[in-house]
Length: 373
Image 1 (cartoon, rainbow, N blue to C red):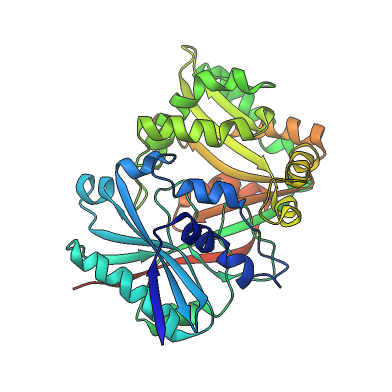
Image 2: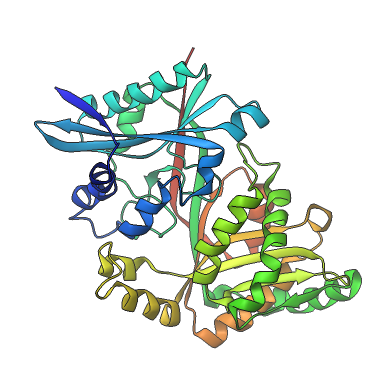
């Protein structure tokens, strides 16, 4: 018999966060989070997302042993602002036991019905900057720090619970040697002149900060047309600024501005921290910081995290300016591999941006949906 326990104490929350460490202890491909940071993400005083959302966390027990977990999430900005009556769920992990996964999903559906919501979708996080999707292809490839990893058996559990595919994402790689500057060098010069644009490069994080709020505004504009997009508000901007921007190499942040210094495009890349996080084993001390700082300085893989172009400048080749700047930076850093984090497969605009680099899809992931009526 499966027993559910709602997370109410610090001890329970720590158990919730640490469950995957047991589930994937023998996996060569799972990238663990930093335990302390993961715990903070569920702290209502730390994470401003809880101003407009709520989450209930549950642990599943079998014979007094934790065998599964799930976060049931209600995002009121999505429900009230977009009339998307969706019950979100994420951080969904479980042993290969259909009773365990079904018991957890039943609880998610029960909560959704109590709020008169129409359907569930997961695995997703609180917002579009969180992890998304259950892995359906590419189980033998090292996971990125901004994605979830899971065992292959997860898929049959969704199907057994009568969940249907909602969205499909892909992740791809290409060697840096595929980047041929002749595809964008001349173009970016012409585009700069035609639209009076210029690129901004940085060597200090303090120089990036004055532009970050505008970057998040542009992010909201760029992705507003995508399905299930929830805009980032001002309070969340401050949170993400503190959490992420200071962590990213400033030279890996690229902006394009017009002649009035207004932001028209941006891109954020991170060095791959996957191997460093595996070595850290969820802890910053005593050696986790060392591994992470080493990766920040010496990683030969660059993970493309976000790229956005103002709607007025889309399909005008502005991305050529960004690629030219990254080409120079990556050449100097000795980057060997470029990795694209999850992108919606129906996002045709993003596919066009990368077509000249011959990317190879190495992973696919999906979100699943179930009607609650």
